[in-house]
Image (cartoon, rainbow, N blue to C red; front, side, top):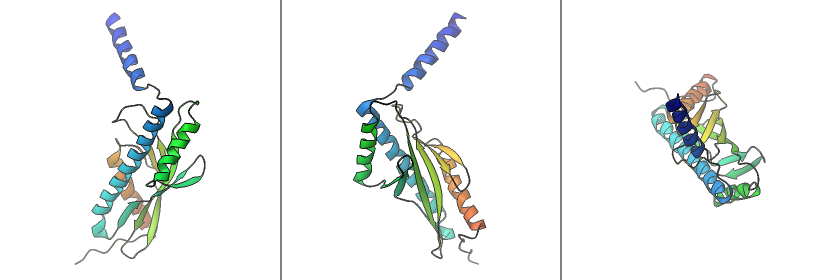
Length: 181
């Protein structure tokens, strides 16, 4: 029993160390890093799906504009203003328990005819843990209800884009280029 208790204590100790709560400027920097990492990865993954579906006549792109769901404020995630927004968001909450951020985003899909459709995303940025390889966000696709962690669910994210495109085709909003004979 003593050995089992020692293992449990080691587990609890390691887990608490990983959960170490970042505060102040450290929290603000880690949160901003999670936001940038999550959106950069989603942009890269969407581009890879776009490359794969190019022969079907599709272009796929993660939109630059995102909406902060708590303030209903639209921000360009690629601008310097976005980083300033993240810093001020964190600074206002310095004395409060650490929180995450909730965003609305879109993936724009254009077919060969020029018709476009949007895939809505709900993005929750995970509370920073200080671990570089930890999941940075949870993403939900509003078109299909699929949800996954980023970056560990990268393949599931790409599959959800494909599933969303298929649903948009089924509804008639988009059309794949016909295969050549």
